[in-house]
Image (cartoon, rainbow, N blue to C red):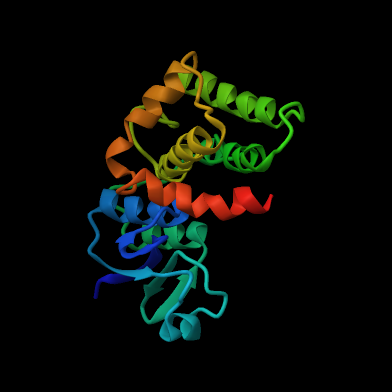
Length: 208
């Protein structure tokens, strides 16, 4: 039986895949593994009753394995790796946290209203660290092959580029050539339209 995956529908377009980087991570993992799956697009502004019954927290992504619904993208990815070990996407433990601080630093900078509060520099420091890592180890985090850490990081970098470009007219510096090349290598996996990403981040920016 195919795995069932609940992922975010686009804001204002319930029949289109949305902008959630954690949902994207699961879909990328399944596609890399060539595993059959059934997708449920969930409108987070009007969640279906059945979805809330199996998942009272109402969060995506959500995956069904052997009649059990599982939330949390880390747990889901671990289960996919366990059930479908070939090709292996396992990341060596010492490299599993590469780039992990970028997304939280991006969110803080995105919400920031003060240009001098250090949030931009904090993000740049993390991006510089990633660039140095890719320069010595790349083109991917663990070398020449894609692993789970890339499938988590790449969608987040796409969100960073789109959201900061729209709301702050900011982009990843051209000097970070290894990061920029890394992002380009994942362009085919991005959501259908940048506007869905912008719409998804707008409430967080406006409420900050």
